[in-house]
Length: 314
Ligand code: GH3
Ligand code: MG
Image (cartoon, rainbow, N blue to C red; front, side, top):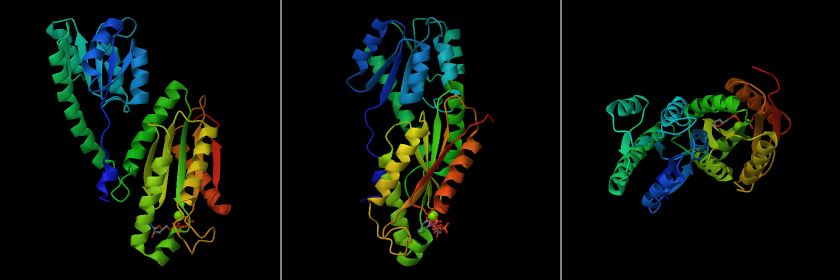
């Protein structure tokens, strides 16, 4: 199989978020776009920001004038957050004056569409900006991918965990990290050869990817035979459960490892660190915690999981 198939799976239908306080306006755009795209909807700014963070739409069509938080404010907040700043924003507006447009572009919008809506213009502009987005996503993803396994690399993880920690503290949500390391991998390499070692790492990465359940979960290769999962909005119990799923899934690959002292097949040890909802903390503390737990798992015999929660303010 071509290795690149795993790197770039065929994309699903692009996902758009339409934000408008008037349900009838949303309906009009839905009818124009839903044949070609998945269309998410929000009727206020707060809802839009939450959906952008959790569903990562490929584009936002944003009404300018809304009560509470207007379109400018929503755009500003999207662009200020590392997790949402790359989502292109198109303003939909009945205002025709240039200063409104200028302000929108200054805030990072990619385009304006004026009301009343012209379906052909909307379709054309959406298509153009989605194409540009797909191209820049692809370029960005190359810089953040691990060459051997196709999962994210450490650079991605280091950037992402800081952004996710900021978000978790702001929203008082939990954030967990699972560190995973292959047991006796040096012996595996020495016995079966480096090529077989590489194959093993690819299988482990693929299985890890399949074990993660949420779109917002991320895995990265942290170093040689060490991988890390970043789990937003996941508390201690959930993270421990996922670690156990991973432990079992890797074992059930039944990759022969005659030199291991734990089992006749490849096993992994895992360390779980969790920042609970109401606790502050910083990214380095959380990584260190997961790392310490992984070390304990190794010390206590390998092929097992240790976990702990951050319990004090940073
Ligand atoms: P432990 O159970 O304590 O983790 O023991 P270990 O042997 O897995 O750990 P150690 O850190 O001693 O050895 C890790 C080995 O992983 C050493 C190195 O040769 C191998 N390794 C690291 N990166 C790669 C890689 O990209 N490909 C291959 N084939 N091997 C790698
Ligand atoms: Mg190891």
